[in-house]
Image 1 (cartoon, rainbow, N blue to C red):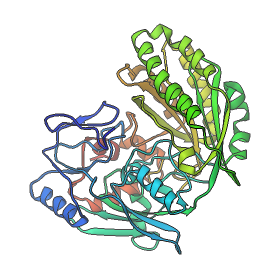
Image 2 (tube, rainbow, N blue to C red):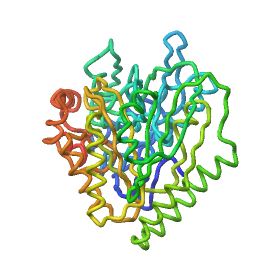
Image 3 (cartoon, rainbow, N blue to C red):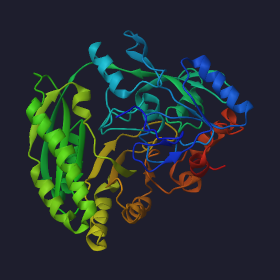
Image 4 (cartoon, rainbow, N blue to C red):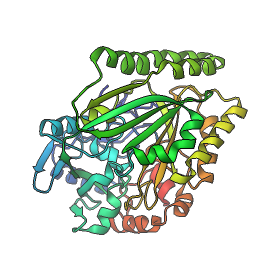
Length: 439
């Protein structure tokens, strides 16, 4: 897969294929100075500016008809500070490259999402996260940021320097400036033991608080139209390393999770009536397995089947009730859903527009195979999410606007005031930001 999904005639498309844009021009700066110059030039030409990473957002957060900044030349590690235990990395660096480079240095991030195709700035700016009892999103591991603001100047921020910018810009939605470098906290590399096992839906919900409390990283997938889930617990381990064997890895991660799953999605799209049967078979095909490896090999897995996704963060204590409502809705709706529902958690953090800002959160993600009509399912799911004061992932499908966000984010006004200060002329504006932040 290329680093950025792109099309013919200057049309840009995202990974999910549900967003397209035609920028007036594209710029691929080779340095921060060149990026600053591009921003100043755009302002002179009366064009808006957007940076785009690997296009993994399902919203039009990166779409523009102005200047599209591609960061693929702004990559690589600038500095590793072993005293402070931080790494400073250029904004366009893919998470995969960062993870591999850190591992070679005997270092690791504390937590990660479940894919690593995205750029570090794209992933953090939209609030990408994995699952964790104590460890939060990728953005929560940021210790410093460098960004080019609307007047072309370079602003650095951390807890000590420009702290009010730091509080917001870690998940800045591209609204405050263009991130050019990120300093992450790292730690000596460690081993994780993953235990994956099927578990009945009702049991997971009944035992959820215990499963959450007893594991550093707990998540599960529920297969709609079944009473089955697949659970995954990741915990630190003294070793020894015991990776998934190449054959088992190919069979379970490539053949079942990508190959057979892809075919099942094609069949389900062509003949929706077959979906519940396929779901029953899929949920039974998974068997328990345990493996031990370095963090990024345990946290992340290949995702080659293209889909569209909606995900909401809700207060953690609301999770069981919400999932029962979701299941009841699906049971009576006649909808046929061929993709599992993914459930993860995050502790409260202190980032202004983080989906976990100020509250312990559970994440519920619904997916549909690319090219399948998803509106009816997502609309019904969103109704349930919003009834629980849900906060949608900034990079995934949702229909919320600034008025809604002002109600579910106590510090929403703090973010918009900072934006007024840093980007008064709305150089970084696009339709998506107009909707979610207000004009």
